[in-house]
Image 1 (cartoon, rainbow, N blue to C red):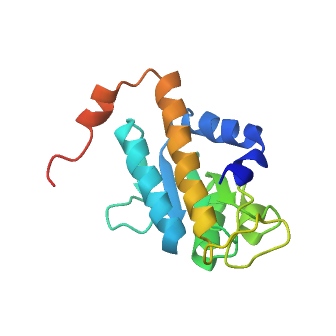
Image 2 (cartoon, rainbow, N blue to C red; image 1 turned 90 degrees about the vertical axis):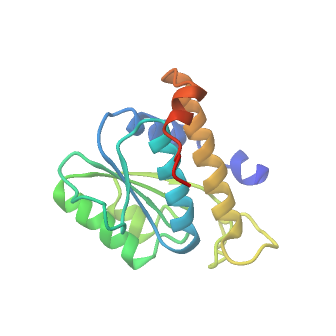
Image 3 (cartoon, helix red, strand yellow; image 1 turned 180 degrees about the horizontal axis):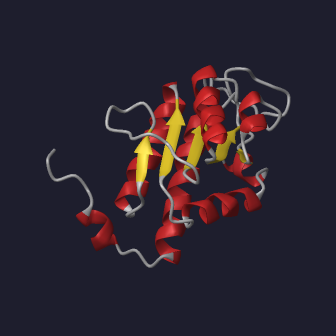
Length: 172
């Protein structure tokens, strides 16, 4: 993971943080393991007090102009994720994608792209090599990066552990 993070553009992470500070509703989408990472990110953002939804859940409301869609796909070619991003753009949402491929269909419908150059199932030339199966390295990097973004957000917004913990589920 260290090799992947060293290849990244810090400005893209700053752009994600700036979007999170925009005081808008956030919709996060991903499929498969990327979807698990998306839901983990959404959960932590909810703990931080943001108005966030996981696309595909039955309680997720309709999107509207000026909402933020964060779309996660290692390959950038997952049809359902691209469809959500394209619909968001059509409605007037800001679309921010997290992917390995800045030339992908997902990147092309996005306003901003955060590139994580980790190995995916496609093993493209620009991806960091990995002995792990499929897109495990990408998924792990997404999880760590999103947790780091949440930490940065909580520090810059002065959100305490106690406040975050008060939003943690107590019906488990």
